[in-house]
Length: 174
Image (cartoon, rainbow, N blue to C red; front, side, top):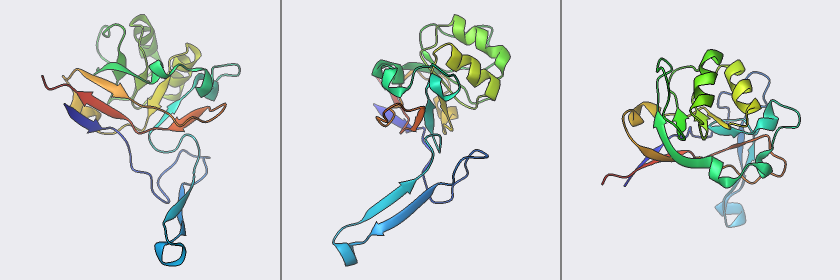
C-alpha cells in the first residue's frame, strides 16, 4: 500500500481566494510558560485543500451535515479534460483547469466527487447537481495511470458550506 498526500500545508499568511480572510496560525500556549503547546487557527472554511458542499454556491443546497460520509471517499482516477468520456461511478481528479463545458461528461459518468482546479462556473454546475468538489489539491500528477482510493474527509462543522481536508490517495500495490 502506498499513500500520496494531496494536501497543501496550512501556514500563517498562506495565499487565499480574493475576499477570504487571511489564514492565521498563532502559538497561544508554550511548553515553557504553560507546560504544553497550543496553536490557534483562524481561516475560512475554504482555505487550503478543501471540500465544497452544494450550499456553498446554492441556497437550499445540502450542507456538510447532509452529505453522507461515503461521498467523501471512494475509488478514483485522474482524467484529462480532453477525454471523450470519463470512467463511470468513480471520483474524478483533474490536474488541468476544468471548464463548464466539461460538466455534462462528468455528470454522464455519475462522478462520485470531482477534484482539481475548477473554473467557477464548472464548480457552480457540479454543486447544483449535488456533486461535491475538492479544490487546492496537490501532487495529482503522481496519480496519472493509477487506480486508487481517495479520502478527503471534512471537519464535522455543523451546517458547513465547506471544510479543510487532509486529502490522500491510497494505492494498493498488489
